[in-house]
Image (cartoon, rainbow, N blue to C red; front, side):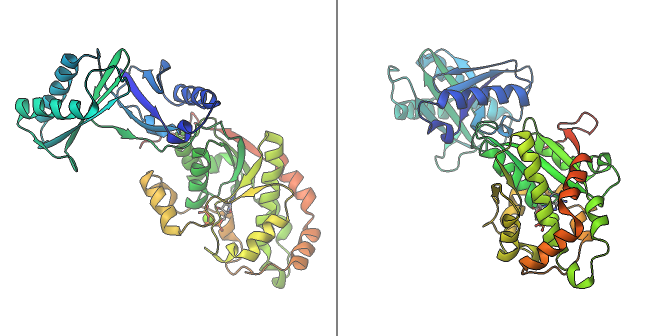
Length: 389
Ligand code: ATP
Ligand code: MG
């Protein structure tokens, strides 16, 4: 089975370093999917696999893909393939209207794109009785011609564009097992970042989180992010250190914990060669995400912190999760350590109070102990069921 794969306009816009991006895309196609061979032909990719219907759209940097009929670039061969394609679609039913879309990337081909569309369209009308509908056809017959080769195909499967994972540096994401940080990770990877995640769990061992929602979501993400790793950090060390905070200070616990998580992620980022940390925060979404609380987290770091969803509305984030079929999993309840913390957090972090609490609990030693207790799992993990979408 041979696939035709067009890469994204993001890659197309690259100048003299475009070959590096295409090379990484080829590598990811082979890494994420069982392609035996991937090669470039005149600004598009061809790939060979035994299986039909591989989810090529899960590889970032792909604009669209199709499984075409490969024919010689002659008018007779193109007509024959286009007619056969339309006849088969009619035989399978439910097709009443069609359109032909042609793209002539070989200017030596004797017919112009518009002529190909008109003339092949007339042949198909005659052979099948289908009606032409240019705005909303049931079937589109695509013809693409490059020197020495023509492709004839029906549906184009749209990818998510973006850049190949691994072309934009590495980032370390704080991943809660909720919708927002999940989509934040997906969006960062779509821009070409190699993503690793840090998850604070409220279990006794990492494997329980791995076999619960956080691990299942990581598995789902791994279908898009080759090389994904999750660093599971136990929450109980921090929890034990904050148990005896006076009630007046307890309202600051969430901000202190956010700063703690960000610091730990920054340490891991440095260890793992990541250039920045990111979160799923969005401005003013909840009490812990006021401007004051977000900037209080930045103030704890001497390291870049990205918030790709800062200006997204919740509904937009959910819409992405639904579109990617992550949402049913992501909305399930989970033993989330942040929900154990005060339901009534301070919305304006007072710096002096925050720093006093941090001094009292001994943040540096806590960081070291938590890092020492961190367990890392690489995804896809063999002991989880394969994720379907
Ligand atoms: P999410 O949907 O990602 O859980 P949220 O809207 O529920 O986000 P919060 O729970 O306030 O918001 O968390 C804000 C951000 O802090 C998360 O997006 C994530 O980046 C980080 N975070 C929260 N809890 C954890 C955790 N247990 N482990 C790692 N990161 C976390
Ligand atoms: Mg959450």
